[in-house]
Structure formats: C-alpha cells, structure tokens
Amino acid sequence: MDRTRYLEILRGLKSNVKTAKNLPDRKRPHQPIMLLIALSNLAQGRPRLQDYSSLEAGYNRLFKTYGLPDRSSHPEQPFRALYKTGLWDIPEWKNLDHGNNGTLRVGQLKQQGIKGGFRQEVHDLLNSDKAVLFKSISMLLDDFFPWILHEDILNELNLENASGGIDLSHDSSQFALYKRRIRDPRFGKKVLQAYRHQCAICKYRLTIGGMGFGLEAAHIKTYCHEGPNRPDNGLALCTLHHKAFDIGAIGLEQSEESYCVLVSPQVQGDQTSMRVLTDYQGHQIARPAQDSLAPNPMYVNWHRGAVFRG
Ligand SMILES: [Zn+2]
Image 1 (cartoon, rainbow, N blue to C red):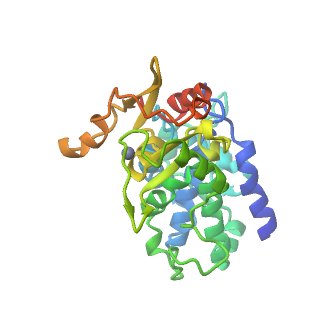
Image 2 (tube, protein in one colour):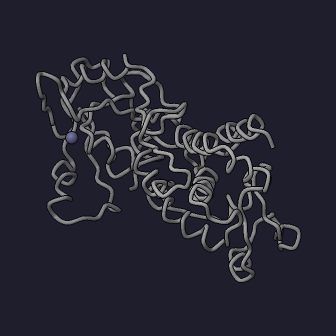
C-alpha cells in the first residue's frame, strides 16, 4: 500500500466512523484509540501482530480517560471494524465465529489467543517511513481529540521510547505534534476580551511583564467535533480549568442568570487537589462583557451530554 492510499483511508475515518449513540457530532473514538495503541506498539518496535488481550489492556487504559463519558469500552468492536478498513489484519478472521450480527465474542478472542495488527504492507510502510507513522498519530489526535489533551495522550502512548530516535517535542520536521493548533487567532482574542482576561470559573488572571499567561480560549463544543470559532462557543479558562473542561471533569448547567459549574463524580484526588474544582461547584461562571457573547445553550448542552462525565 502506498503512502497516499494509506493516508486517504486514515483521513476517511473521520467521516466514516459513526457518531456515538445519542451524542450528535461526537464521533466514536473507538477505532482511533485502537489505531493509536497499534501505532504506539509499532513505534516501540513490538511485533506487528499482538494478542487481543494485550491490545485490550492498552485500549481500556486510554478509553477510560479519553473515551466517551459513559465509559462503555468495547475494544472488540474496533478490533473487528478496523478489519474492514483494509488497514488491519486478523489472520484467524475466517475461522472466527462472527455471531448473528457480526460481532466477535470477547471470550473467543481471549481464549483462542487471537492476534491482530496492521496488515503487513501497512506495517512495512510505517516502519520504513517514520514521518508517515508520526503523521498518522498527529492526524488521529487532530481529528478526534481536543488539542489541549494531545500531549497527555502522547505521554500515555509512551512514545518517548519510540525507536528511531525521533524527538517529538522538536519542531524540526514537517509534523509538529506538540504545536498548538490555533486555527483562528481572532477567536481567542475575542473570547479573552469578552471575559476581561480572567478565567470564567476561578477569575484567575496573572501577568508577567504586562503579558498574561496560563489563560486560554476554550471551545465549548470542541473544534474536533465541529464546534465553530464563534465567541458564543467560547469561554476564557485558566489552563487547568480548560483541561478539566475538555476531559469532562467539569461541566456547566443552566442557572437563572448564567451557568453553574458541575464537578464530575468520577474525579478523584486528595482534598487539596479536589478543591481546585469543588470550590467552584454550583458557582456561577463569569458573564461576558456583552450578553451577545454569552455561551449559547446549544453548545453548553452538547458539552454536557457528549463530554461531561456526569
Ligand atoms: Zn480557572
């Protein structure tokens, strides 16, 4: 398989995967997560085919934090679905019991030690061209996960041990994984101005040499899930509350005048750390300078259903 064809299939994933049940515009992250695990294995020089059980372990670890809010992890689904993309190999495919609706039984996959991984030609392509390997990772992150979580996901994938000695933090090549992806700088500027350069949740505002730091314009409906660059889809948040918002640790609930902060019952930590979130539980967020810039309930409701871990 040549590079162009491979990248076409990967790019097509965004339009081909279904949206999660009852969550409009929230693309199912199952196949991207399985591919990220396989790409990480490949980057670390592991064998092309891995036991389902071992893929499942890596998959579940990522899915619990970066998957869907209801944590319904079913690694056997992407393991099977990827076979149809032409990228994935399951040598025992023909001997498997596919059930009435085409599902694979987890017990069968585990007991029979079924293996899966990239097809040989894809494996060879990725192995011979590390630029394509890292471009794949970058594309999957861009298409399915908000940028603020990219670095955390990369750390989970243990890519610092990747063979080939590619320094992912160094922007010397055509792909810069750590590059902040500001698609529209006007969006950020408008949002920070609307909230008077303060975190809408904790009022954080620090400057050094007159310049603010640690404050960001967050998309309420995330960019990778078709959220627009409009101020009423934005919130000024400090880095920590931005990350908590994008990972679903905090959400918003409509109150009489504005929105109140919700804290996910799934968040765990010691008392001092928890206070960074719980101190604001039930508090109203700041109102923007103009009412027309206030968060649109449509985007807030999307976040509440598709991201917040209630
Ligand atoms: Zn804050």
